Image 1 (cartoon, rainbow, N blue to C red):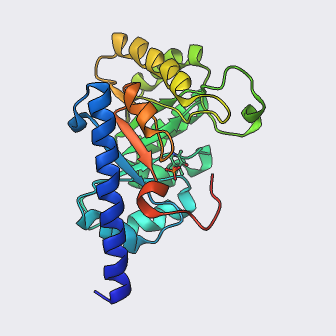
Image 2 (cartoon, rainbow, N blue to C red):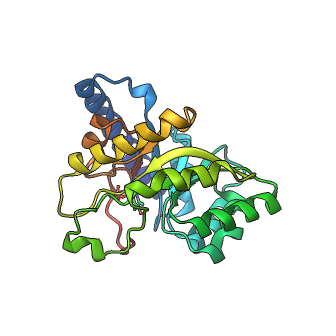
Image 3 (cartoon, rainbow, N blue to C red):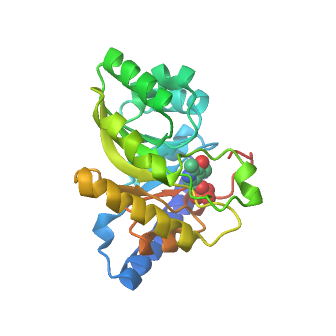
Length: 242
Ligand SMILES: *Cc1c(COP(=O)(O)O)cnc(C)c1O
């Protein structure tokens, strides 16, 4: 390992330690067991060398939000025992590529996407876990103009039902990105309610993917099982990627 590599390794180790302490404190405050939480390291804009270092530090789950970037990175990491999460908005013309490496797609938000994902998963002989992305910005704030994706809360159940009807797909649960300009905690409470409705019908669909570097405590309080963490783990991205 070069000294630059060992410096980066030390930096990532320190960030991971601080993140684990944050998650542990949030769990304690919420009366939850930290073992219920999976941290997904969102490595967009960061090199494969960072993914290798994180793997060496015990990270098992990697998240990416653009297929053009994720596909080659996943291919380079094929030797690593990783679970790959696709967390960005997904166009149907990318589904064929995404199903090859993604174990979990967090951004399932429309019927046509379910159909195409299922078709491509079957063609590839893969089973992809799908999270229904819920748009929590139903208050219609100005920030809703940003294309975050997600179904309205009242459409989550019908979409989930469609996922369960498709061979090649497995319903995992729900996902959301807290809207800008509102309290994350209120938004995550709405997600928690949708998750409870879903779980009442599909008991195995227990995933709640919520919380990023800035609001993971609120997400843990609202029952999140998966935190999608980029900045707190890898540092500030130099390139702006939504
Ligand atoms: C980039 C990204 C994250 C991570 O955000 P940070 O604030 O850097 O932790 C989480 N979720 C999605 C969908 C993202 O695109």
